[in-house]
Length: 420
Image (tube, rainbow, N blue to C red):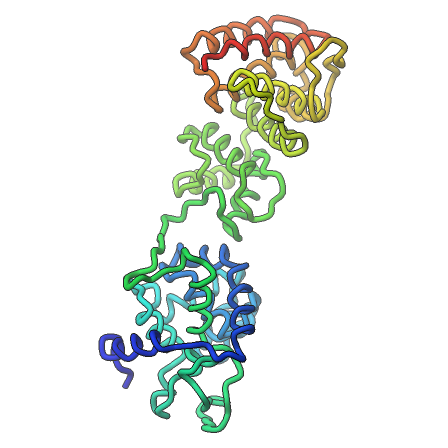
């Protein structure tokens, strides 16, 4: 019968304190630890769902399958079929993360609320089984490559060889090296901090759930860039636009309410509307601005907030016209019909972006104000904000302005008057 954690805790404490990696194995332990650190975001995604420290998940993954993401964490079998060895009948699983969550929940690791080094030892040994205790040796699953283990191994189910040396690295030497390489991995006599979230997705998140979120937003017409499973600034902007369009707080974080609203919207399908929402225009412009700024970062001019506002406006217009920058002197090119970034906006406006009251200039003016407000340069209640609001109306009544430099000059003057 397996002993309880409280019974084994003093033993684990002593082993953990006295453990040293064998000199001839230090290079291999270091290589393994660094390889696992490279996949930290994937382990953290599972940690957020289960509450199990990502470092513990990582060393289990290494021990079970040499960190092969095509396998089930519980026993190293392929993800694409039901498991055939203990635990049998699990799966198949669509992703490694789904299988890992299942394995940790199956063994009850998600029920642990306090993670200490001793608790990690206990749960990792239990994950593999306490069979080595019947042979009076320290489990190589935990201690191989360290001074705590010398020989003895189960070479197959139920078949033990006292002379066989486990050639696979144990979990605890790798865990210790991860803690040395990554200062954020600390137990410090108490629980390693693990945040169990409510399923929200925010900037920095990666994985299949992010990919599904991006695909759903794109299906509804919200531009997310590449559907790559990485929650970056463009995805955040798309989430904000979706939230604003559906009456939710525009936070840029896909919380449970946002994800449920997205699911309902996808079930209904996109609803065409004759009313163009300002946030839709802003979403397209933000995407263009991000790309333009990445291609040609604005160099500081030493003018502080005034120059920042002016440079921001130049980038806005440059992105709008498909250029990396817009010259602020005479001779700039004309506002031509359907330039690269204007094309989707023109389409969204029913092909009427350049005529009547839905002029491109009107869109530029509105977006300029919205972005300046978003970055804190102006506010709707400030004199500058009021001036820009008036100009939006005026621009909407104009048929168009032939020279982009006149737009830059007009908005640049206003931006220069923004309060510091």
